[in-house]
Structures are given as structure tokens and as C-alpha cells.
Image 1 (cartoon, rainbow, N blue to C red):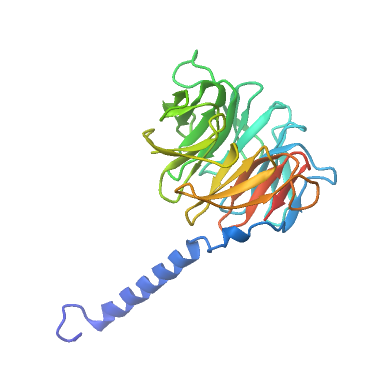
Image 2 (cartoon, rainbow, N blue to C red; image 1 turned 30 degrees about the vertical axis):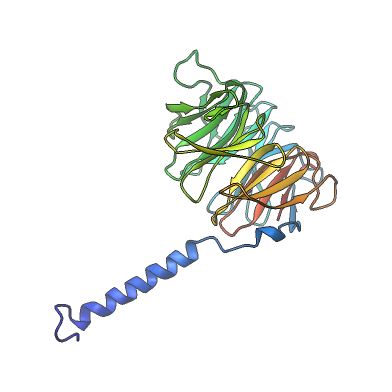
Length: 302
């Protein structure tokens, strides 16, 4: 067959090897499957000191580094994969009402401060790179900015809680668009708390006051919504079509992207696996789940 084709064996073999390498890389990059219905056992507890801190926000990057917003110490702690503190940044710059946190595609850290109505961009070595406090115009100020997340394309999505909208910015902080308004109907929010990006390419926003999750396109077109068992606070998407959301009832809920509740875990308490004030939640490339447990002054890993 090869003798009759236009491609000689000399060229065919490298192409086959190349295809095999690409397939192996693809399989390695995919998030390992996990049984989210059995998610409940705490595997590790992370603290920057024996006493921990007022941990409200947690984010993880592709290198396995954790960024943890500590409202009590007014800083961000950077931990390595083993949970060891690398450095603390933002002291003297950040306020005491920190909330959302995320890494951008260049490894910089974005953190929101609901007290000052500002969003800060820091380098990992602690340099303040940028501060933004408004959306379309200088008078269009944020009002309690909360959850923040970076899209696969590198755009920054900010939940502007008391303005009942999500604003979208480029990596330099320039305002691009906003979506949402006050209300309970389709395309409306009553306190958007956090935002994440599903494996289906859509944007998922927790609508705290309306006790639901709202689904949008990345361009700000409303798609659908689904009610949640408990009012959802902060949210994270997995690589295999699931969503994990914390609640003020000390429970983490696990949903499919379609809105089906498949599992919940946690409950009130100070033992590992229990929560006293679960805030932000994130998932790394291996499927490990990190929950910032403010009341227990730690990050719990599941």
C-alpha cells in the first residue's frame, strides 16, 4: 500500500509518532476523572502559621501555586504545592475586607477589596501593578466587588455585588463590557457573588439573593439559570462538567453544569472536613479541591 501511495514510509513513520505524542499530551492535560459523589474527606489543612489567618479567598494556578487572601492580615499568602508558605504580599497596600482572588495568565494575582471598592493586581513578588475602581467611566464606581476570575482567553471577570452586574476587563484592567442588572428575572442578579468558567465554554455566576446560578456567554448574553438547594456563595468549575459551590449553611454543593445536585458535604464544625465559614473554592488540574475556611482559619484540601 505504501508503494502505491504518494507518501513514502520515511515520512509516514514520523507523522504516526507525532500523532501518538500529541494524543499522549492531550490525555495528560485532561483533568483526571473523579467521583464527585464521594467528595467529603479532607486530605490536608493549609495555614501560614499555627494560628492560621482570616482566609476568605483561594486560587490555584497551573503550576500548583496557591494564592490565599487573608483579610485579617491584609495580605495575600503564596503557598507551593506542598502547602508551604513561599511569601506574603500586599501588606501596606491591601485593605481588610478582601474577598475574591485569581491568577491571570501571566501569573499575576488579582484580589478584590469590598471595603475600598477596589480591585488590585499584584505580581507574585509583591509589586502593585494596577488598581481599578470603576467600570465604563470614572464615575461608574464598583460597589462591593466580590468574586473575580480569569477566562481561558485571559479576560478578567469581576462580580460587582451591589451594582448587580459582572464587569469584564482586559489583562491591563481596561473595561470591555458589563452584563446583568438588579432584579429576579432572566438576565438579572440580586447580589452576584462569584464567577467561574464551565468546561462547556459558558460563564457561571452565583446569584446569592435569588438563590440560583445564572449562565451566560462570555460576551454577556444570558443563557439560562437554575435554582440551588442552598443560597450559593462562591463557585468553581471542574474539567469534567461539574460545579462546586460553597454556602453560608457550611455545606459545599456539587452540581452538574445542567443544574442537577449530585452531592453535598461538610456541615458545621472545627474538625477537618467540617466548616465554620467556607468562602471561596477552587479546583486544580489534578482534581484537588481547595476551600478557604475563614472560621477555622485554614484552607482545607479535598
